Image 1 (cartoon, rainbow, N blue to C red):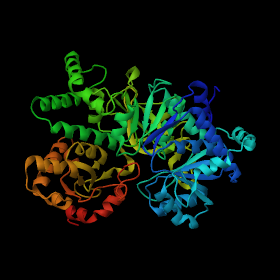
Image 2 (cartoon, rainbow, N blue to C red):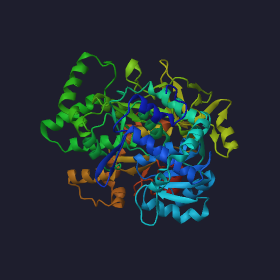
Image 3 (spheres, rainbow, N blue to C red):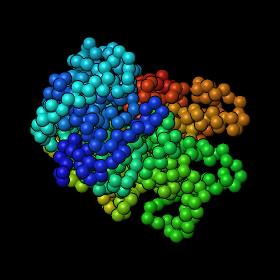
Length: 590
């Protein structure tokens, strides 16, 4: 095979070029188990044969919902795609009414779920959908197992039907419907073709310095997110062994145990890793503590390609030996590359991790663009802090008069499923309107400055860009989450979710007599004054009209479960404002 044109071509390409003993590895009952490339293909073919026996036709939709990334997801993905059906991945954390909406809107005929809890959720709404059956990856009493589909497919007599179906799948055919988590309104079904995703894999591969056939990756971002899904196809293309983390909570243990070379994550996870490292450094004393924070301060000044001069590079070499090497050990010691997407990455994290020889290559894209539009690459001077890299090959970006980023290329979606009106709203000819504001620097790097819909004007007619202020505020260790508000008001203000975990440690360390329940922390004048110091510091970076003049602390943790965050950990601004409208009224005396 020389030409990959459909998503199910990737495993066959891997078989021909790398034929891995450990294509995918997951943990079951406390033990890691692997499937080879050949076993991956064999099981995918069995799924295909089994689904055909169940009556699955070309263009039927099959929903797949998993609480964690796992080998079974990928086997079923290929099994579904190569018979001309479409995989509809769904976030496991959404509300039951959203499950019902997506299953009905997509007209899914079968649903594969990972575990007992998800089976119960889907069973509770099954009679309101067109689902014929639910199958589980885990063995769940009273539920049908995905192994039954494989069992159906053990008889190879209809493999000729699978081959015929495969040959009839064209590159421009629909491969998947991905429902955007969305911060407002009902989810939209993004239609991505085989060509959309395949082109994005092939064009992104040129920016990722994998050791083909030798690298090892740890996967833990939800595979229902297009970023991780595309990356998994990219790993297959490059012969990278894929290990699936047990959970986000066990990621640290898995990193040490598996020692991967590559991980992908969203900024919030890198922030948490950094905060944990700093917290450990804060517990040191004497010369060790001095050296730790000397190294961090050095890292915060990092510039690539030796731009800081020879004396800085000598100090950095020493910091890497004494301090940063311990960071690498904490993340498994073999990390060569970390990739970030989905939201803006704070430049301080880019600097510090690059200084520690664990560079985070920030990229940019949307579900509608399959997803990658641009990405940083350390090679060929393709890495610039504070940007999302240069635009990948075969993709064109132009900046509209109002600053919006417009994108054209083979990666741009076919449209929104059953919604030509919304599709028309975001397309100007072949250009997709991203809704993001940005600029292209002189050296060709793309820089994102804000979400178009998040920008607002104060009552004085001045524009405010919330994300820039929020990123500055989040550099405070006392602040976990924040949104800047103030549309139509005389001044910007902020709603802040304190970093309760850090604040409790700080209270203990300082021997301050404050109750450590969330409400007491939010009402403490000592805490309010301390956070005010960090707000004042952040304000120095902005014009008077942009400065946060007031803030309120929220006594809850903002999470996916409570509705504050989308499944990709982006803040639902509209929801947060509604939840804390009393605090907003207090700020503005409404």
